[in-house]
Structure formats: structure tokens, C-alpha cells
Length: 130
Image (cartoon, rainbow, N blue to C red; front, side, top):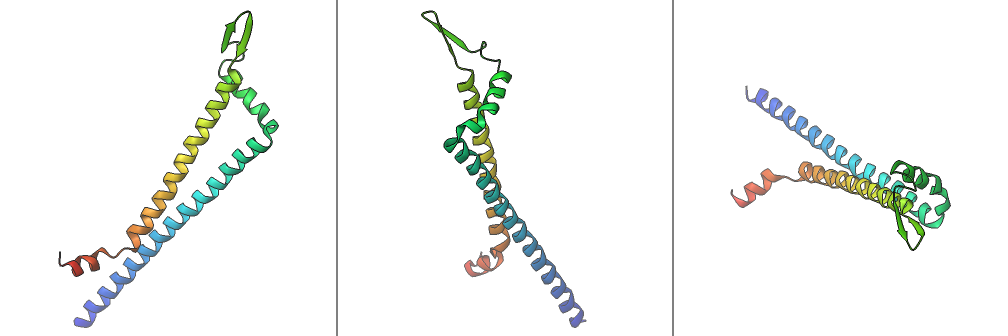
């Protein structure tokens, strides 16, 4: 009878170890995906800074979506000052900011998963006699 209890405990221990390994792997996958997405976002920003002509078509499309050049005009002393492309740039930059924020959240979630699966709270509670 005692041998059967040891076998069951061994199976549960093996299953718990497998679950911890799967959780740690999931956390590492989240962190690696975050690094890859951050790398891609950095490439986009770097290309935009070093070679801004690449994104002229994209900025023009966004300016047209936001109302075109006539929608955002300030008249000053018989001059037209259009802000359509500036507003389009602000919208694109805010989109990149939101994407970066989401990716950092993904990486932080991966780190939390790894922390939760690798810490031994039972052993620390026994040591502290809680």
C-alpha cells in the first residue's frame, strides 16, 4: 500500500514539474516575441529617421484619411498653412507608441510567468514557518 502512495506522489511531482516547465517555456516565448517585435519597431523608426522619403506615400495616405490638405488649414495674412501631414505624423507616432506599450506588456507578462513558475513558495513558507 505504501508503495502505491509513493508512486502516486511521484506521478504528481512529475506532472507539477512538467507544468512548471511548460509555464517557463511560455514565459520565454513571450519575452523572445517581445524582443523580436521591439527590434522590428526600432527598424521602422530608424528607417524613418535616416531615410524619411520612404514614408512619404504612407504619410500622404494618412493625411488624406484624416481629411486631406483642405481639412486642416489655418489662414494667416492671405496664406494657407496646412497641418495635414503634421497631424498624420502625430497619429503614426501614437500608433507606434501604443504598439511599443503592448509589446512591453507582453514582455512583462512573460517575466511574471517565469517568476510564478520558478519560485518555490512552499519552501519559503516552510522556512519562515508561516
